[in-house]
Length: 298
Image (cartoon, rainbow, N blue to C red; front, side):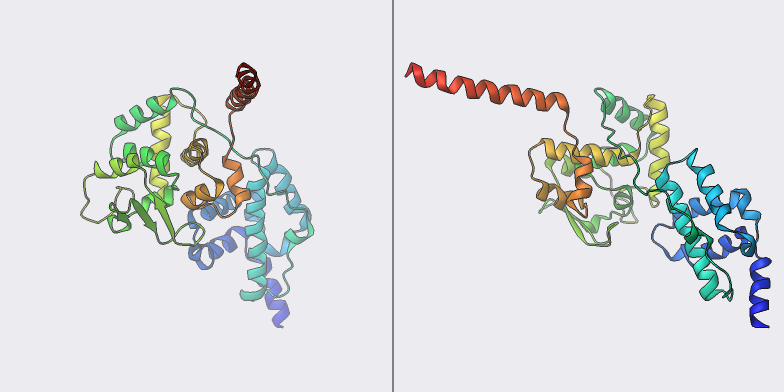
């Protein structure tokens, strides 16, 4: 009787209903709740959301996969399917649907490796971007300048408090980063200057953004105002990290500043300009050919 009851529940629970329950019981306890909520909404909006759990087969998931791949990246589809797979596992083990299989396990998942972004600020873009940020108002100009100087993530910027800042040591302590580790960010004189110009808030926060996504939306509006296309706030982290390398800092020191977990991940942000490399090669060749001539003259 129990098995029949379990099968009946799976046959009378739609995927959309199951996703709503998953959102409340699982997703809301995760750190990346906003991003996962967006993915769940995408799943619910698809016609698959109206299907009952017990009727969904591998071929249905494969059809969803192929359809989504026509409009979004393989990495995005993979993340959505990982949620879907975990939902079926939770439903089977914790929601009393022991007879429910996991159709996601019977299909191939797209590769999670997307094309790495290497968007840098183009000549003149920083000036017009900052001008647009000033026109937008609020703390956005300070946030953008500070991001370019420190390579901090938007979540780290939104969570900053004045208690984290040590002007004497020129550091910021980030107690809870994306990697779940405490990090100390070194501040340049420029970064210190930016902080010094910001009025103190009553709530103790450095910036007037309590939600990282508020920074994103403000940045999107500023980019539209400036006429800048295909630039995300995270690209500022890429830009700042690349600038640290261009200053001559070692990978070890850059990793300490930016908080990238591995050198392999950090390598994605170290795109050197081909023209700069070419110029350096020519300079080294000139120095090398010049040295023997000077020796002969002596």
